[in-house]
Length: 562
Ligand code: OOB
Image 1 (cartoon, rainbow, N blue to C red):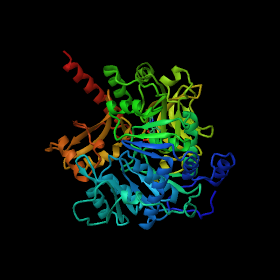
Image 2: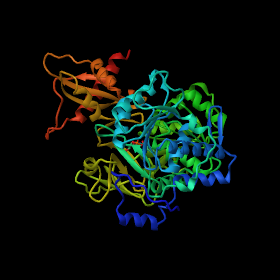
Image 3: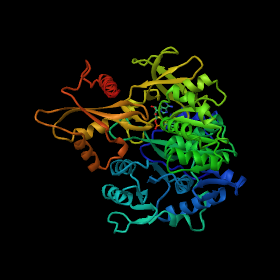
Image 4: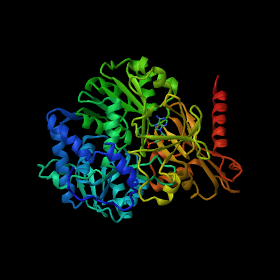
């Protein structure tokens, strides 16, 4: 434990004192920093490979030195402990070096997704008062440096843009650009002890799946995130022989810390970074690098299974576990993992807000195939309740509430929303409808939150509806999930329009593109109806709309069938 003063950030909701004491006493909170767990492995195995990114292979020592140089670079840029920086990078070793740099000096990364664009990044920078933003130079046809300048133009606190790749060929008008690499290649002259965070300091800000107009930020402290990682490591049996392949964006809680990249680093294992989960390359990488654990979403698992069935290109001899989570895996798909990919399935039902459930590696196949597992910690409190908030018996669907040593008590700077998302006793209302079986395993049976889960990517219905309302002639708008055999769900927008108007999907897309919205949030179908149905209390009746789009899709399929 270090002696540095705590860095406090306004807008963080602490656990009640009584719970803090309980978690410390029980040893759940160790009062250590995330970096210290990696430092231990650097000492133990300096020359073992920690990270593989294409031709780049970094040993524990090299990664640690790069992150130290980077930490010093941030400090030299006057980015101070407690400052927030928006971090948006693809899956690459620089992401890991920079994240470790932040964690070592108490700079707080705001974990943006690679798909985010001006709309989301501006919101994240503004909500967190970020002092810097880190982006790649380009992503396909988007110049992200340009996007970063637009963010800096809107958010005065953003004083620096760090670029992974080449600097802008043009003048930068709102904030100076510097390359990220410049900070990685110097000799480290950084004094760790001066900066090491306390256990209760904020480690990072994760993004909520979002049921509100704009995503909320979730505060993860060193204490709670260390515990999250150690429990996931224990359940997934990560050790120094683990070779981990994460295929989701590294900034997502699943691939970062469940157990993810940080779990592999805590255990002395190795992480393989891939820019995309495309089947051919991913399966080849598993064989070539001797991957033992891969993590992905159901849609990608399905693509891997189909690819393997057709091409039989991969042997998978080293792959011990395939972790699948982020959205509900259909039982039929779960049943195909072991026979076709030759590896054990581990279902992971987690949330950036904390609680992580996993099936255990030695569970019966019936549990692994049909449930989403049980909490990773004995200290996770679970309640499954009816509409009145009363517990329902096991086997009956109900809303999942949770509390525990790594489930924070409130979103960052969101008092009003917190009053709705957390009960007076501090339970987080996940919005998931689950069935708890008598053996303690949970089955995700639906949800009562207004969100679309597009293959693990979460879209807030309200956010999309707000864009629709910007269009002249849109009377009422309702975004709902439409079933999809690949992604599970896609986004369908229903609108009713004022007399004399003819709104098209292109009109909606134009408004969203002009606002710089991430592509995955664009509606994939527009249905115009005379009147949006409402419930008895006057709320939009989304269930009727979901049934309607299901019927439409079914009818279309029948019409198309020969
Ligand atoms: C993970 O985290 P988020 O924050 O992107 O999304 C959380 C939500 C959950 O509340 C639930 O609605 C859904 O995603 N979800 C699942 C699921 N895993 C997540 N729904 C059904 N089955 C599953 N296996 O998605 C996340 C965080 C950590 C580990 C794994 C996933």
